[in-house]
Length: 253
Image (tube, rainbow, N blue to C red; front, side):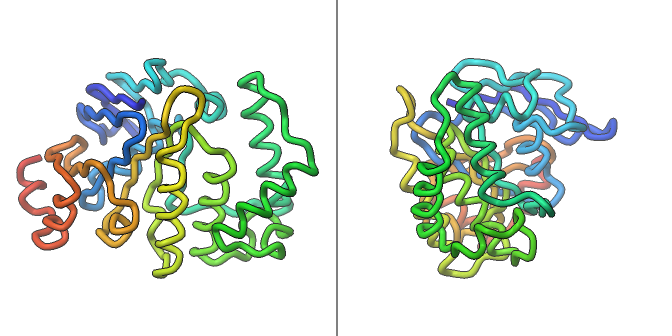
């Protein structure tokens, strides 16, 4: 599914990711944990294609096809999704118009039939109930006037509608209450085992806390420190990190 090999990423001339290698097979959820400044968000932005995050060496492939060199919209059309740690507001742009335009742009790029206005209305209303967003919120400009938790629910609404082949979730759990954490887990769990074409979906979940992983139950947990993976293990590794912290891994890096 997603394979990252010896990745090096620089931001503003400073190397942040230093030889990171990671593979997430189809149908699996992997979690990345690590101290602040270790490169977690840099990794997510580099894979998604954000400007200013320069890949200086290594490769990133999705289903065996390189995504490096593609702009973010082309990567999205290939099935790559990024849930932001700090979702932005877009004043003047209607929420439903924004999401439908993004959905149909992806479908058009893949040669699929676009979703009609009537069908999209049914779809977004059904998915919005799952993530706990009211019709009133859907009528607002995109994320304008939303709380932090509501913005994260909007991210999960897009995830549920787009049904990407691979999703990177950058600290989606920050600012969420108990009910919202369960909602995020429900959305991820409903998608991870589904089929999209011939390939099951995969997830890379970036988090600081065990609490989200209680709902998602990752297949693997990786520790990112000093710009590379320094430790990998099963779900129990997350509990070890909560108890002992990152000091030993920082020293190893």
